[in-house]
Image (cartoon, rainbow, N blue to C red; front, side, top):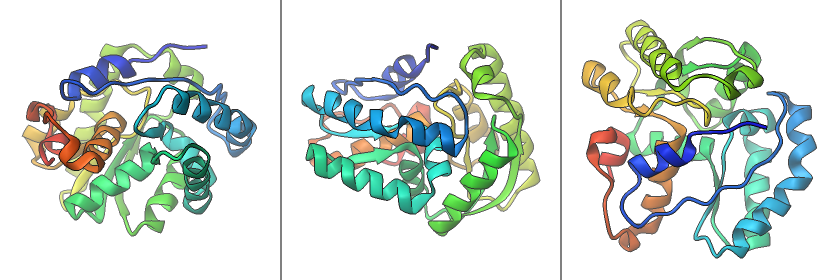
Length: 232
């Protein structure tokens, strides 16, 4: 069991009137076996969210999508849409859509994951035509990331983000994925210093939902949270 800061981050960056409903899977590790073990439960969670009359479902967990691979992940999303009649997304596909919106094909990557996860993520992005030109990571287990302190996460985002952007001056954007990574306050600081879009799970997923809403988006998000939401 663990807690997260999704609600805090979401209600900081989302515009007035947008609501977040969450439920969870019991992922125990960043491995394909751990992901596949939770797939039967996934459909129950999709059904639960659909019963709440949500407008869109997003599966959080870049390591989940990375372990499955892009083809399998998109099959699962298509099946979710068939079962619920709702648009279904995942953080990683939202990151790809956001990067494509910016025309970014060469990116810097900063993570808190082990090498095998970074390798799978790089492969997934490559399948979408996006090249990781530099990567910096502070490898942690899922259990460690579940119990990290918000202040430490913020500092780590500044350190890794700065390190990888200095190493990749030609990178068109910085991707810092991880639903458990508390980094929203680092984004404006990194963007101000390096002038490139910084993508977090909560930013890309919120951007994708609002972008899809089109004219139904009655209020725009506050641009102070960075280039991603300011681009809507």
